Image (cartoon, rainbow, N blue to C red; front, side, top):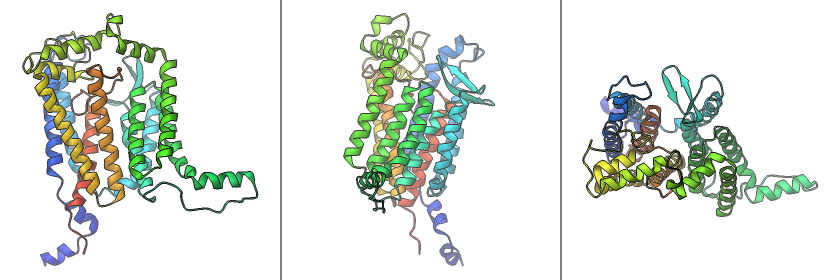
Length: 408
């Protein structure tokens, strides 16, 4: 009887019952736990002094909130991991559309300002950046559409165009080189980037482009179109940077933080002091001196500087190694996914994670100009952490199919 019931299971049920990838799960849980410990250590002083009249002097304020969001995120991760990831196909367009609507709500009374920029919205007790949803929305949309195409984008199946007209001949030429097939992706990406540009959120624009580009590249886009699109987008970003005062100031401060230590250069300068103070083995967990109101955003964008100060170069390198193992394992799962959608989805998610880690550490160490990109699993931000764990749930959902029993 039990054997008959097992045969009666649907393919979706068999996929949902497949084992998740334990090495990937262990790395996610380990990084989340270490991140919570570092949030507790880095935010202790600023929460206790409560200069923003937010914590009421509770030194565990930020830690307790982050731990609550982490618990909710872990639950969401396991729930999402039980969903057949093929369901994400039809969800993709709705996630993308919802992210655009939420980003537009930033410019309504629901919008909130922080750090001189209007990028947040508040829905009840929750305050978050809708651009976080846009990142995964673009990846889902691109992966869902591109998974239905041939391995090599262009030339697509030929359509009959009216060669007697200039428009028909032009469309036939564009169709033959694969340009027309890229139009839906260009429109979707342009809309998302346009709304983000209104928020003057360069870091989010970069990450959205990275996610989209990684999926396009993995889908087999012609390198010529990839290079042309990269050049066009790079030129657009450079134009925005050079025509925006606060971005030009960031470039100047990156080149020489000591040129403006009273304002923009103060944070990167103090961050480098924290890194240098840690030395090889660090000052010890909880013994940072820079977190005592010397280093701004010590529990957020610059938390890696506190990691370097308290755990030293050895501890920082171990954390970087954990991130590297997580990313490598994610790409291994992408290679072994059973279908193209799973592969493209994982490539997009893990590329986004890899570049976010690289950008944050690069900024904190002075290799890259300030961008405002947070460190996954570490930087304080409850909704961002929940979204990151939800993305890890998608990866685990794909991993279930790798070892799932085959349909009879």
